[in-house]
Image 1 (tube, rainbow, N blue to C red):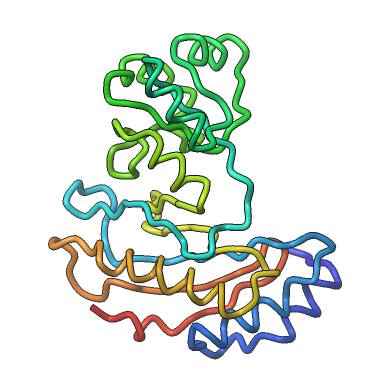
Image 2: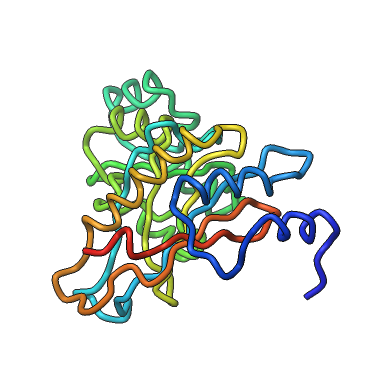
Length: 232
């Protein structure tokens, strides 16, 4: 794969033979974020589990202390004037029930980043599974997006709550902020997310849990972090 000049120059800043400490890795990855826009910094963690087994799933949600730097659009599907009012007052961008579900189905409307619903509306949302599922937008109780407390869920989503879960290759991919955050804020977000992932270790997991860990900017190369620091 041929890379551009900026990527090649950024790659020169990284020692590919080295496993960095997290603070040094984040300081380095900030230096590699040379695009004209504010690049997102992402964390990629490979775990020593098998996602094919239900007892080795790793999934949850966490509010990053410094947010993600993204303006999150929230859709709430709920019933009742009280729930609708609470969702709107908490900052939801879109609120409705059957009308919103119909808009998604008929217009393929997807102008939102998070969908929150109440348990009594899962029948409505369930019909959207084939549309929402592949995009990772299906509400889930473990992620706090199926809840009777819609106001709290909206507030957390707006504050930078992210969901982490394994993909088919047993890797978790998550944003931890923007390059403009600086090293300290990114490190706080990194530590919070890694702490949650370590805490979520399944009892059925054997051997080394954190196999590898790396951070990268949107357009830049990855910087590998020493996984031994997170041994559990």
